[in-house]
Length: 263
Image (cartoon, rainbow, N blue to C red; front, side, top):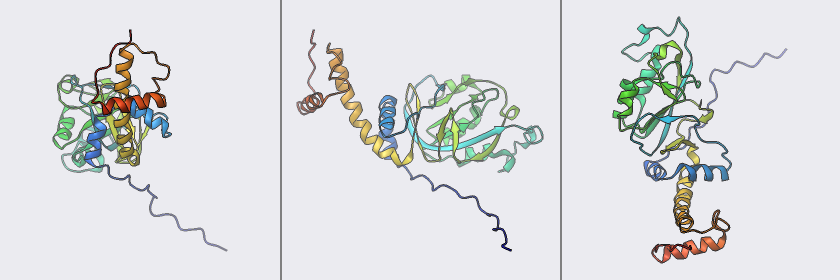
């Protein structure tokens, strides 16, 4: 009689995402979300936008950074007690651990189960991450201390603001694992891009390709916008035909002269 196989002692893990260098992040930060989402769609990524989130800070600051993730599950009364907010690293308070693991170039992305009844965190922890070099903080729930956060020169995105403490509804169950945020899969190391309109998730292995494609697309779209503003119809112009692309190349070689009105 065969013995049953021994139980697995380790959980198989996905291969970590490739590291996206700061030079690529800086290029992506200059891309528009419109170009990014279009190019990602062409490459097969259908819906990369964290829908329903808005910036809390008054000054909009475009950014791109590497995802560091935080996963919430519903709170439970015998676990999520106020005296578990220890001042030393503890499995009962992983949120503090995550904050102190943030490195320059990170964007903290919090899976709050799209539940805004309690704040994901507030001013103290967000300030600490900003000082550690984070590029942004994002939740599909809410934050507290909205007045203070709105005045920070730092990208902070959420669905809104509430003063209710996280302990009421959220338990930090894991750090830097795959999560869902606002209905989109986010893997540690993915590039998180933000501008005045959206938060977009870029798979890490596609980051440099997206930077190359978006630099080209944003430049030609700026040219096309000038021609539309000059009075031209869309046919053959947008999306650009091969003739229009050739006209763009000639325009660039000519030093980008002003485009005269057609009407």
